Image 1 (tube, helix red, strand yellow):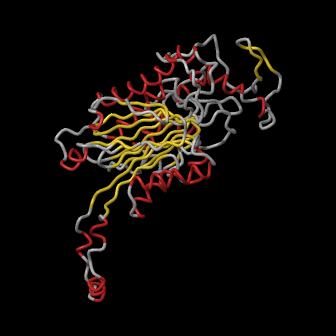
Image 2 (image 1 turned 120 degrees about the vertical axis):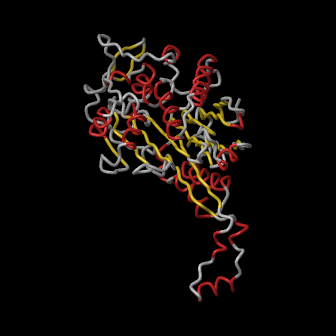
Image 3 (image 1 turned 60 degrees about the horizontal axis):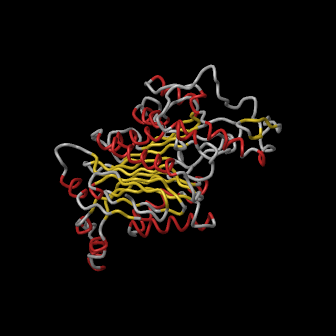
Length: 421
């Protein structure tokens, strides 16, 4: 699905006196399965949260795309409905390990991208990533950080530290335990005895795994928590993957933010596409020459230019500024294997193909490797004119957009054949 912008290009090209957000797109995970009789109130909760994230981020009057994507993803992390932050899934050993990333075309940063993995005790991984980006030069100028040292740097700069119980949710714990039966032999220390909870015999977990602590109840109760818990037994019906946001501001700068808890029962130590630069996310800007001008100079003219060591100034005519921001969601291992996001962008930048052609080629390559056009995932994409693209090779993808094309009203959708409304 492509949503064309009618006015955003003029905002960017003219440069308005008051910087503002021209377009914002978000996603809340993609998946390959759905339940036909999904509870209507739960479905409505997902739609409502997507709409709220779009509207509150837009109404915040952010002046930069970087601030906008961080604000949007922070809200998705705070809701237990999504697999990021509070709603993060458990790995095979019973731990939550989060990942997040940022990339921007906005000038003024020592590094245009920073990613972090191994996040265990920080409430909002995306804010940790923003701190690392903003203080990147002081921290050595690195692009990829991991684990406790990165979190400690974030805490020193004001990110919120939480106990491991913060991430515990009933539904994610049930997903974890129900998946252990076939995987008990994969990790030492996971015991095979079962215990009874909520009337069901489920596999036990390792001594080091996370468990709810009734004597120290988790704070930060979110308004989505009650409905999330009400349908905790429905573990296979809605998108499960990464959350993300892409935004364009009136200065023509694009940014992308991603955050995830990874795969349910992933092998401990697994790193996904979310913090892997070029796989699950990408943002870039460049100057290009339209096809109309690329062959304007004759062969003889180019030969004379070379002989006389004369610069061919005609090649500078008609140059156009282009930019792209991409955030993917789905089965991250396949985004990694195809280097999805950067290869898509490079098809446009170096291959002289349209956005639609590049998107189709990148999605086809990944779906062929996956073996199906349903289940591998999808993406949200913005270009420098504010055009929004929502390619999808899955049954569902939580997604939304607010821009001039939507009348600056939030438009959202979940199912693959659904129009945004």
